[in-house]
Image 1 (cartoon, rainbow over the protein chains, first blue to last red):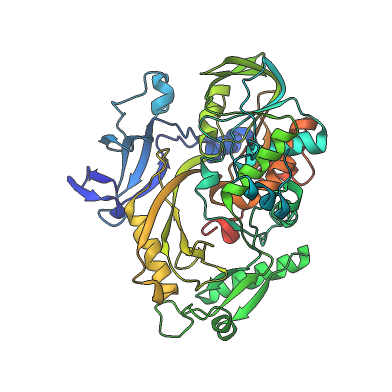
Image 2 (image 1 turned 30 degrees about the vertical axis):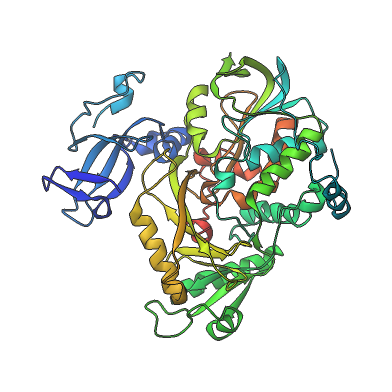
Length: 106
Length: 417
């Protein structure tokens, strides 16, 4: 069971109050009509799925219902940091280029 | 290969079972193979077997990081069925089902395939409609599936609570009577033994650390123990670690790896001779030949490679099982574990070519890969032998995530397996 700090409630709560909403920092194409099928498919379905550090989006669904980001190790399940929407992660995998790890925009 | 039979058992009993042949060799890898299959689980071993048997390609190696059948092959809840909704998946899983039906004879290995039926219970009108639609679709596809009402269901499974007093009363169920379960280890071992007999090298304790890709074409795999092993074609059947291998080859997959948990109880007397699954209260259960209740849970929603999940999921699963079978409320659980499943957004697998030439992936089976083992191996062998997909496997290309022709099995398969 993960013990998660909600940055909005400023409290640690149990995992059951939260819902994992997948990979963070996925940027919706500004003009979807201009996308090729490949670009649109990749935006919708293709994911990093790393074995190691992962930046992911969570929602405090049974609490304040607000979204926030988390950097977590997918192998040890250790939560490295919690940061708000719009912020950049400070714990990053050094083998992955920075702009890829955190997305072009957040 | 030493033939297994009742007579052989008797004969070997005279020498205190000390002279049985080793089930497979333990070879050192050659420098080069026609085909290398990464992943020595059920799917990888089945692929190797059918490559050798159906396509005559025997210069094949299966490379396994741990021991054969030591991953999801030995972690699943062993359910086999083919009542899927869409024609593409029904064809795929029925192909597998037909191979299951003759598998023990074919491999000369008792895989303990038992067609004891699989019930999907319905607790709401929506459940009933969805299952009736599924039954109708299956009839058109030529696959057996039928509805039973609550009264009939109570007669068929006396321990199931079909009363109107439960929190989510059961209105009926769909049942595929040809479905059932099998001994999961035996499937991996049976395929391994048969593949080895046909000349396939099974390389255990050998971890792939990189793929050798030149000019967009795979030419070999780099292993921790034996360095580079060359290959004309490479097939990956590594379930949860598919994303890791894809990263080595330089592309992303439309899969995410999640922990999927299961648990077994202490052994108890026979009380359930079939498989019951409920999408609504979210749990599934069967009883093994040893007598323990084999119980499956849902996936943990986050990406995880740790082969363990959160306790909340176990609690929900047990709640569902006690809801369905109140008489199990005092049964103690013996063991609990997790496996890493790679789930696709449309809950259907990928048997496909990749952006890298001569590299093929068989992945994305998510929570339902065990039932697909024979069919998956059979079709993937065709892909590896011919460089292009078998007609049944064609719709399961990675391309569907670009052109939008998804095979959305969430309704039939996304929850319980």
